[in-house]
Amino acid sequence: MTSNINSKQAFFNGQECWQNNDYIKARYWFEISSQDDNFRIASLYKLIRIEIKEGKYAKARKILNNNQDINSPVLKYIYGLLENIENNFEQSKKYYSECMLTPDMQYKSLIALAKLYIQTGNYDVASKMYQTLQLNPRFYIQSTIGLTCLSILEKRFYDAQQYMLKIDESKLNPSQTQHYRFLNAYIKYFLGQLKVSDNIYNPEKDYAIYRLFDHSEETLLSHIEKHKNQSEKATNGCFFEYTDIRKLLLDAREIIENMNGNHFESSDMYRFKLDTPIGYKGELITSDLCVVTMIGTKDIITMYPVSLSDEFDKEGFSTSEQLKLKRLQGGIKR
Image (cartoon, rainbow, N blue to C red; front, side, top):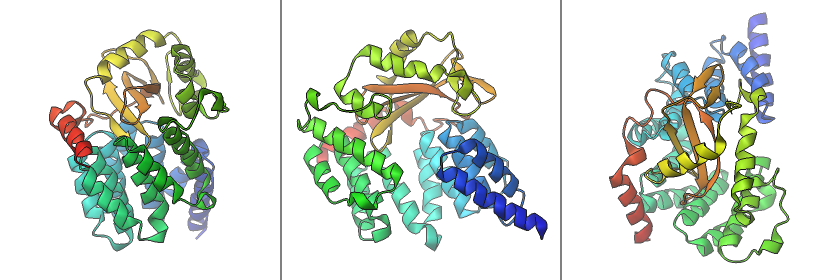
């Protein structure tokens, strides 16, 4: 009984730390609660989410592969997310579709599938899915933000702004509020409603918005240099102190020109393996890089080391000419 009480308290402690973005402490508590069968699946889910948030995709996959609960809809869902991130869209769709068979996961899985259909260039399908989800008050904000981001991807900025106007800001959580502010500024910028003189944004706290006004190479390099912070080696990871960021940026620009970005709402992520190590991810030295750009563009916002699994891009979508064409056609049809 004492063990159960301790495990329950550990799980709720982990939840509290998770909500406060304190992933170091959250990991500690969830590792304790994962030892109890009553909290095992929920704790594993959170532990894997932490690894994914920190860009440790290889470790996330290892945890999943080492646990034989794949029939758990919760773990199938997180498998679907990992496959999406690692460009295995067909496998991701399979997992999410299986999750749809679980009644209390249908809407959550539908949101995930809508995002996945955007990845595969099926924009009309994704749009209809989001419109269906708007009918459910619990998923109205998520689906409307999804439609906003899809409109931005298709460069329909007026439509994106109309979707934004339908969102009640007072109902947004802190994370959604930050995202809303960025989307709002992004849309206004491309509609010509913001001038350089409107740049009141802090380059530290509002870096992504600030970059809309300041396209200088030095601002970008200065931001990327922060990813050399060796104190983050165990968590978010970091570049080696001697890494030539300017050269790495030039190489990254050349590489992503021939790649399909992984759409993540308001940004695109290009993940790939390099020939030589560039930094740390936890206890491992890694040669894997994630380059983040403005959605639908090759305009780099930042880049940092990640750790990709052996299953990364096994379906070949990162360089698929067929996908590139399908995405173009998906945007043209609308």
